[in-house]
Length: 212
Image 1 (cartoon, one colour):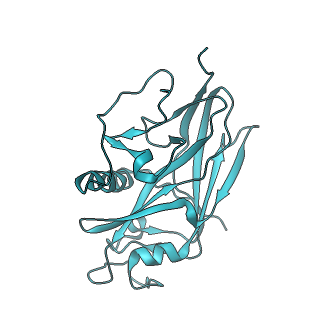
Image 2 (cartoon, rainbow, N blue to C red):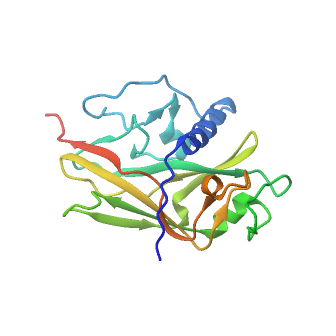
């Protein structure tokens, strides 16, 4: 039976922000100034989120779609879906789990990576033009230690262009078994279910005709 849980709250946003800010602090990438959303996409493919160049951080040359400043592309342009990172306790020492839960690996991040089967990215969910693509565990592009957490960061392979106009992009994650992050004992806040579940909301995406 498929269970659905959307991971789009403050905790997920805080995790990806923490990973990116830490990358700046350790000089892993150059951080351009924060830009504002434009009416049409910039010819520059780079996605800047909270001052961080996500393309450089994730090693992606194509246009990224995911966080609020980066939800527009040109017709005919291939794009890459990113999604909020998943953080866990740094190791087995001090990890806190809900009652009755036993991880399959001592370190919580190793437990998550061992259970991750991939994601299903659905475009225009619930409409006649709905289509989806499945990406395996290679959706994880990098794993970083940030203060008291380890964070897995995600990006898909390049996806085919969408038609002109508004669309949605929804990500479902697949795990072989339940995973808990070791950061607390409330399963609603700290665990992901076995099977397929909704990981993001219906992210709005707009594709624009190219300027002549």
